[in-house]
Amino acid sequence: MLGSDAGSNAGSCGDTCRIILVESIPEGTTFSDSSMPNPSTFSTWMNLLETVTRSLDITSFYWTMTNEDTRTHEPSAIQGEQILEELLQLSQCGVTVRIAVSCPLAKFPLNDLQALERSGAVVRTVDMPRLTGGVLHTKFWLVDGTHLYVGSANMDWRSLTQVKELSAAVYNCSCLAKDLGKIFEAYWALGIPGASIPVPWPANYSTTFNMETPSELKHNDTDAAVYFSSSPPALCAAGWTQGLGTLLSVIDAAEDFVDVTVMSYLPTTEFSHPQRFWPAIDNQLRKAVFECQVKVRLLAGCWQHSQVTMFPFLKSLAAVTNNRTRYSMEVWLFMVPASAVQAQIPYAWVNRNKYTVTEKVAYIGTSNWSGDYFVRMAGSALVVNQTVSQTSASTAAGTSIIREQLQVVFERDWSSQYSANIGDIERWESLCGSR
Image (cartoon, one colour):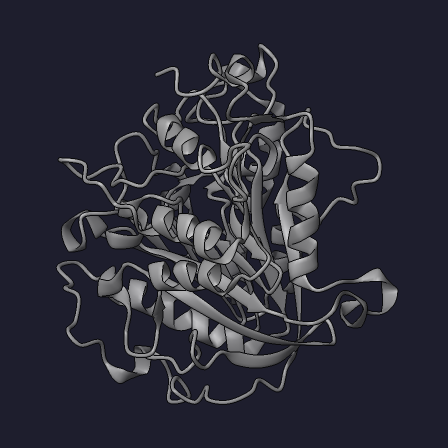
């Protein structure tokens, strides 16, 4: 349970927070010389591990920080192994380490979690299949109740060197860290064997930071309104803005453009049986284009594990635009290159980013865009609203607000050699959804 200060988060946040984009760029993937790299996931995790003095809470889908599971003897796995080795030392240094992880699946080894438990970390598995019919798909770190990391990267060595990931790191921001900590505490409580979802959730899991009353703070010396969303609805205590409602509101509030990058896009459920039509996000994108003349660009992931049913839906979105309409809806695919050797690494070489950027908002999430991720699976997102001009947003030392950083990443990927229009079937058909 949270401490006595759990509910004291109303109003503005006095911290001067620093929010930065964090990326994993797969080996062999290169962009133009003018593209400025963001800090890597590996360097960010190492920085957080060097910073921690009291407590580290991590929530994740699964753990494979070495490449024992793939038996590929891949040299780049050394980054994941180094992170794991640092984590194994923390408890001996007096740091309290807690890990909330989804109920293990047969294909995921338990070696890392068992080693962490032997080192003194406390691990709880959350039986999401029993509780909601989904999995714990959230990925975030909380450090000393002051710093945090949230985004697409799993606790997987491939997420450091073999998969394209995007996340956010937030430093010196206790108000946001404490708020995200309430989501962790909910997972932690549900990790007790036989636990059930409380109805309603006790008050100490609630928040006053949400879509209607976000936290008002300074981010890189610029005013910002920030909050977290959470999924699924059953795991949301009072005050939390649910994941779907957040995403729909971000799209609805856009007046100029909506740029989206997501690995998987389906206006259906994806893992439930039978599958159901689930057009909530799809309808909102079409509404934005049709009613408000908003320009939408969607960049979806393309790899051999893509659902083949995704592509007809993407083509349908793209068909909103033609030479006789004024609507602007563009759909492209991003393909991460892999050599013959690299292609032997399973479940790698894909763009797993899950974000949206508009002229007002940066949204960085942990969920793909299909029904199960918002109805059954645990996920979260960081939402930063900064409706400031381009000139007033510029700060000293060349830093910029997170919305601008995210827009730069989108433009870089959209115009890169790895992107192809959904209409250019010859470029992508043999690479996507071959299963």
